[in-house]
Image (cartoon, rainbow, N blue to C red):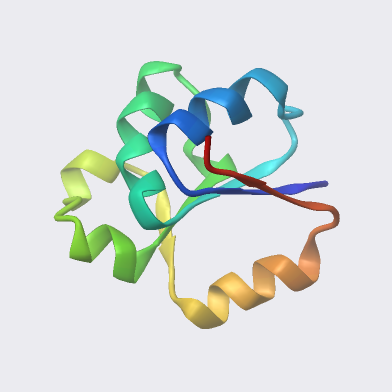
Length: 91
C-alpha cells in the first residue's frame, strides 16, 4: 500500500485521479485544505490523515476535518516506515 503526501489542494486533485483505493493519503502544508474535497468525493475518512500542526496552523476545525484523523510528527514518521512507495503531490 502506497502513502501519498499531499501538499496542496491541486495536489490532492491529481492524487485522487491516480491513487489506488487502498492507498493512504496524508495531507500536510496547504494540502490540509483538501479535507473538504475529500469529503465532497465521499471517500472513506479512514484512508486519509492530516498533519495536526499544519491543520491547526491553518485553522482547520474538527468539524471541517470530520472523521479524518490527525497525526503528529511521530505519526508521520510511522506512516512513512509502514508504507512503500511514498508519492508526493504538490502541483
